[in-house]
Each structure stands twice: as C-alpha cells, then as structure tokens.
Image 1 (cartoon, rainbow, N blue to C red):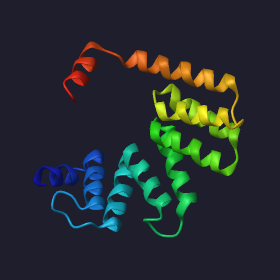
Image 2: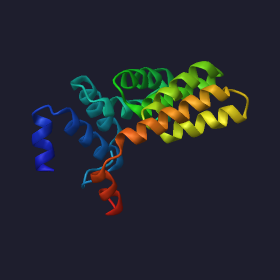
Image 3: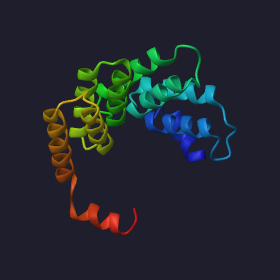
Image 4: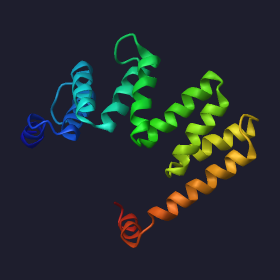
Length: 165
C-alpha cells in the first residue's frame, strides 16, 4: 500500500485508478467505499486514465453511483472509446443495440472487433441471426478480428500463454 500511495501522491493516473478499484472491491485491507472509489476514478480520468473512464462508466451504468445512470455512463464510455478503450467501444455498441439503433450498434461493435475483441464478433453474429445486422457486417467483423489477432501474435506471447500467464 505504501508504494501505491506514493504513486498516488505523485498523481500517477494508473495508480490513482488502481487505488479506486481497491476501494470499490474492499481489497488490500481497505474497507469497501464506492464513493471514495468514484472520487479516485474521477481524479484518474482527469489525469488521463482511460481505464478510469471505463470504471466510471460501469459505476454509473450499474447504479452504484447516484442518479445520473446511463446518460453519464454513456458519456464516459464515449470518452474512453475515443481514446482506444476496446471494452468501452463494445459497451457503446451494446447500449445502442438496446436502444434499437442497430446500425450504430454494429459500427461500434465492428470497431471493437477490429481491435481484437472477440465478444464483439459474437455479438454481431447474434445480431445477424436476429436479422439486425447484415452478412457483410459480420464478415467484416470476423475478418477484422482475425487480422487483429494475427497482428498481435508473437513467439513470446505464445510461450507466455503456454506457461499460464
């Protein structure tokens, strides 16, 4: 904890976000405090942590923080997605799908699929089977996903996976 607090004192955005996560879940001997977690995530987001933006989105969407809910969650997901956070992009696709904006949903999911997020490919496949996406969209998502996975492959990653990392 001393090392984490030292990094937080130096305004390290990832350390501030990490401390927020620990408060949120009551880990590392900290008492669970969602409000404190929210404050830390807000600070980390202001310092540039896209992971903190995603955490804020999840907190708002789940109702863990105040009454602003989905509107605020979507705002934070958008900020994180614009900075390349793949899960936030996927979540935006799901939100748009729930609203019935199937084209917007497919576009968000296609972007996250091309970033190597398999769940987005699966979601587009489900949309295709429900008649909410086209075969061309699914094909593009699958090809984009495969290209991303291929690009990320390396001998060291394969070795680490075999070793259980």
